[in-house]
Length: 279
Ligand code: NDP
Figure 1 (cartoon, rainbow, N blue to C red):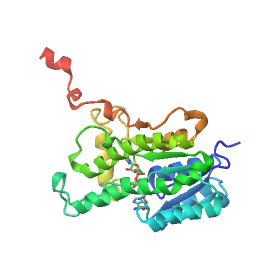
Figure 2 (tube, rainbow, N blue to C red):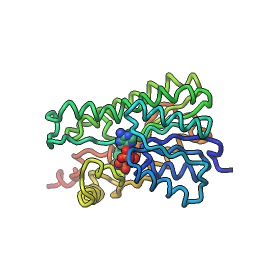
Figure 3 (tube, rainbow, N blue to C red):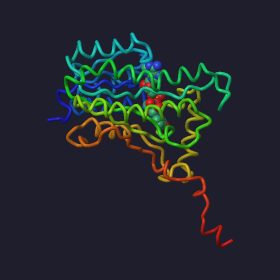
């Protein structure tokens, strides 16, 4: 029997990228899946991808919604319960780096960008967690938050509000994990490094710029030691691992970093110590 048979999963931000890949893997592994995003066209692409993989329509709930709105969140929860009756897994995946319209970076970025960035990458996670909690208490379910290596302890002046939202999300993951384990609910997280998704396009960059960034990072070992950008499935597989209690039951409140080694290198390591010593 497929391992998520009879389980219901809500995956925010599943109209693209990592969320889309996770939705496909969950559905192929027997789960009932609520897929969602604001963009109806891209959400339909996710739905078609899943149906084409042989999953029946009866296992899918497709909801166009803005996860930063209370109405959108309520619709996600209600439509999932109406169609499937229960909720076993919540994947808080929707997120984005929101650029300043004026092009400002660092401390010059506006407070409006700060509010929007935190609303999507942090507050919506907190609100979804509160709304889904009673249903996960019933099923002794799982929450998986999608963070970022941007939240790790190093400076991120280009995306400082995004980085601080993800750092706060990591702390939220730890605190909710301890708060909710008393009800049998497990909370964990994944922190991806660079992954080839719509993330850069969502910041208003053209495809060519996205490609350029990926090519640069994956050809510089001081950026990604593995010399390859991650694919959505690389992260989706970890999400499924954390949702599978048989495999990961003793992991509580942790974030699994999947970044091709990016966070393990320092700029200093871009140069050979031995070469400097010898010169
Ligand atoms: P994508 O841009 O490909 O996907 C982001 C998803 O979030 C889309 O489905 C988008 O849907 C959804 N989304 C964004 N804003 C909203 C909103 N207000 N309401 C509802 N849905 C929303 O990016 P990724 O797949 O890469 O991003 C997934 C997660 O991974 C994010 O949390 C991101 O921060 C994180 N991450 C990504 C990295 C990368 O290199 N790609 C690195 C580290 C972390 P729609 O546009 O239809 O609303």
